[in-house]
Length: 236
Image (cartoon, rainbow, N blue to C red; front, side):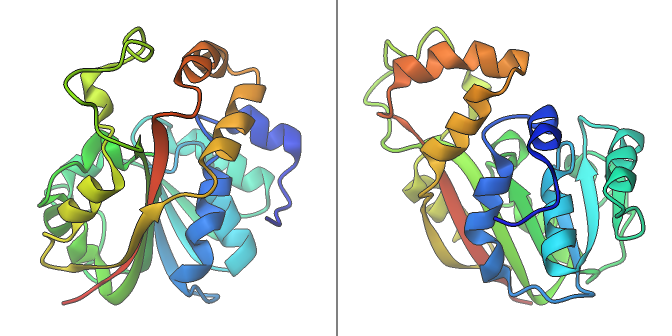
């Protein structure tokens, strides 16, 4: 993974398991070229947006609900990319009622470590995002989940940390969901090869949430958690 971002800059802006590693696993399959326009959905502090702009020369709309556009703009300016990345503070659930985009605007869309918060519905992609992505536009989603379903209830070792809103599901569950889309054609849906590495980078940083997660991941011990990576295209 090649980026001008320093180790300290990355660590200071992590929000969970390394989104950069997870993006790197799928980015080349998006077939990006300079000048394309990419929606980075739920971009967090914009590390993935910076990576896309640096590596592929694309224009990025960096959209997030939790992080303000002004904060992200400062980071993009720090990296000399303020003309290449446009930050946007918006809830994807408001699309397309709140309509900041033209239809067929984006050549590609990515969402790294966020889809489980809002997209665990068979109709979500079609109703909220498909209108804005061009026909044959590429889509990559990396979402946290489970290696295997729970038998009856949350395993005892995970119970102290588990919250129902986590929406963690298996690769097969996500694949079956996305295959119900009218517009999204799934080309691959598989388990990430970089789950443990992405988690380890997060656990080694000094973010309070990372420190909190260390006990959870020690208890999980590699038995349950994974990431699902999906790459597809829009068909209209």
